[in-house]
Length: 448
Image 1 (cartoon, one colour):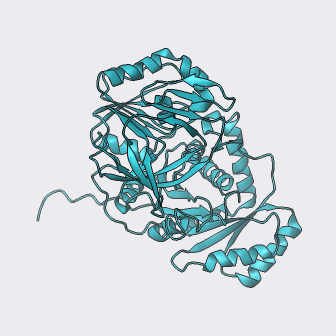
Image 2: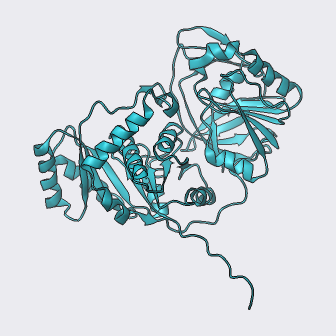
């Protein structure tokens, strides 16, 4: 047989997962410091975030200079995970993935956890343990996490918020006695000066941080001074084979030419979704509602992702070019679609935390309020209630809902979805669809 030899696909780079026993243990700070440190050393590091997070990936991207992706073991089909990994591994030496919540916490008691992702991909786990209020007991906690599931590999532990040399020595002695084969990679001291400011939905966004580079460099210095960084390449492993990538995008493109809102008020869009739209042949153009820009007049779809419109409600209400552009798009028959913050913006009005009402686009009969905050949080199994450019009635998606807004009114119009929780509990109708304008509080991640 003659002819040009077939080019072999590049080998997948090794990866590892940074996890913790619980939220608030310091895994985000550790991950950011590690990413920044490796990037400063000239390593080609790719990063990922387990679960439905928008804010941490932006910090990852700032630390490495490379895009960060989401890997979601509950909401993503195996084929979608494979596609995302393929795109992530281009030109990378190593992949560092940050876990979500505690290692074994997920959508349900037995699905969607960081441990599930580790088991599916075969990536080893580094556990970040907050030892602030314990000493030798930290070894017992670590042993429990190391032996809880046989299908994951705990390959190193970092103890955080250490009070001093005696504190570290006590933990080291306990680990040597009870877990002699588990490497202790380092002891990070308490440093209350290196924190990320937060707000009601979690951390502030990376592009809002007043000294982002300084913060990342201080985190890198902390990790570099107290961690055996050279051990990490020996711990990382290539991902186990998964199903081949699916040529079908995670979400159908809502149009052929999509105008997408993109600024600090509308920043919560999943990269794998927009890349899937482009791969399916759609053309995406960006516009800034905060800069009073109008969506592309030639667009046959307008996408308003989630974000923090409640923090900028006064500015958005005053931006006539933006609001009139939305109305003009709807009037000419473009599909106008909003998720969470975008859904609120398509409504009649938004009441901010001070109780002031701001008029929005008025394209959907919905009114939302932050004056009486109520947390709504969880994965969603969403089924289209009728035909839309997102699919035919009955098409199922998986997504996530996380907001503090309460509904003051949600009137005429058919629901966009009917929803169930990850446990299968019926939540009833969700969102609205009026003509070719639609939206809901659900951030869609993948088709079911």
